Length: 429
Image 1 (tube, rainbow, N blue to C red):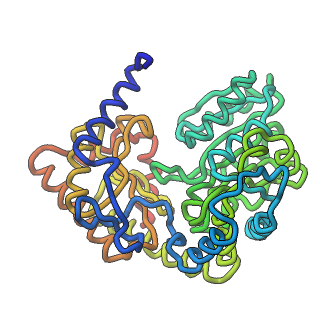
Image 2 (tube, rainbow, N blue to C red):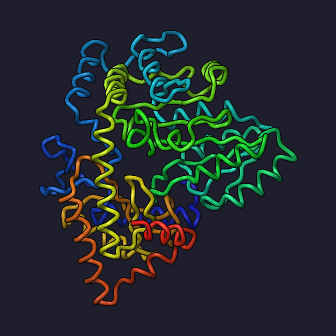
Image 3 (tube, one colour):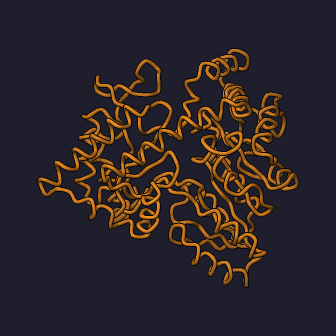
């Protein structure tokens, strides 16, 4: 094995210890297949980890559609859609185009979609600017462009003034300048500043934007079209990919294009999905059933129920003075615990033993100074269970503070770029 860098040694040691004490890769089973909890070591733990925000994956209609797909077509079809386009897959794309109001093709996963989309639309004569926290699969796709001679650089998270300056500079030497970002960031739950991005798209002729909307899908927008298109209706220089997993609740991804010509070009010339097996038809039929729900009034009922939970969480977390790093309106929140790995081990063990499952985060997903917990809200939980979680966090933090083992203000210091935004959001709650 190769010699590890200091960063990879830290990651390896951290993950090894976390597994040893039983706070990651926990052996589990569903609790009665409800999605609201799991069984770990014989004990029920509430699920605040899922990205299936609208609980579609357990919907009986969706499960029956997937069962029908297996019974009719088997587990998978190992034939590229370049040769055969199955009618159910075509029908799904047509439904998705109604949801988004834009041309769409589907891929078997968001990662595969990024690998197909980015290196096809971005040339080696272009420049790429990555947001610091854009999803890893977007960075990997950008590396393909870099390997072909393209310029790739990274800027600090959501820094629009820096982005504006870099666009101006790079436009002098490159055909196009691309900003690659998430709409809703999967760790901290904060969002891209779309008003600023739209202004930059309208200001700079060479500027294009690619958005991964995986965590913005379904829970917001007309027909559940997602946070990106909810924020910028349409733009000829805006390119979007979203997940049909996560909040959508099925499998695969949707590549969303500003026009039909770009769709045709990517469909014909991409390398990642052109000759790959398509999404299994059981997943296609499940996604098609969920698309029907998106095109009905039911999607707004689900959005409203989740919105109620988001509003409650923000008010209660503020009341308890929890070190939540941002209060933007999304189903993802982030609880800061500081740079101490001992805190991560201690908090994780406590939450597990108290019956709550959340996502512990540290390097490489976030900087060590921004270590903490991702809390995902979904329709698998209700206000009562969410209140129990928040009270449990507050009581445990108060106990540690009395012992001199934790400080909320210190835990937030690693988020200096987010503090002003956090304070503005808190004032509005």
